[in-house]
Length: 168
Ligand SMILES: Nc1ncnc2c1ncn2[C@@H]1O[C@H](COP(=O)(O)OP(=O)(O)OP(=O)(O)O)[C@@H](O)[C@H]1O
Ligand SMILES: O=C(O)C1=C[C@@H](O)[C@@H](O)[C@H](O)C1
Ligand SMILES: [Mg+2]
Image (cartoon, rainbow, N blue to C red):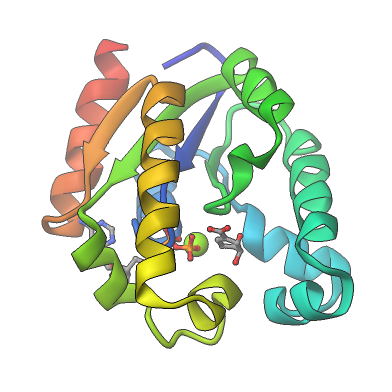
């Protein structure tokens, strides 16, 4: 783990970034920030309302801007689309360790489908979500310092991240 650096959890919707982030922060005694929740709080609107009122590009700009304001050494659950801007990835590489939470599409689909808090999952068909998953899988994999499976018990994923961060 980089000294004073953040731990960025990346991965597709339902991969467990929010769930794992909270537990990881407790175990490592660090602050936990969920970028999705931060945007909702700062903009005082739900993610779905931001998407429908201002569009996806507006959401992505806010996401990148709020991410960069988080103070050092936090555990950060990013949004699934955080790598939308390549410049954000460069910033993340310089400011912490990037952990890709990975699970097969079929498992993630079961976790996210019909969840009204995830506008992309609500508006896209299973086939187009699968296509998005495949594209993102390549981007997340090449961005990651560590890849950790989340198609297991939550505690196993958390233990694995801690073990690998200590070696990193
Ligand atoms: N090993 C695991 N790690 C993480 N989450 C798991 C695991 N096994 C089951 N889950 C479940 O999967 C769901 C993951 O949802 P969560 O909201 O944490 O995902 P997310 O990556 O933050 O999604 P989003 O990008 O939409 O915010 C939770 O309901 C959690 O309990
Ligand atoms: O995968 C995505 O593009 C998104 C995931 C969510 O975490 C939110 O950031 C938003 O719904 C977009
Ligand atoms: Mg989340």
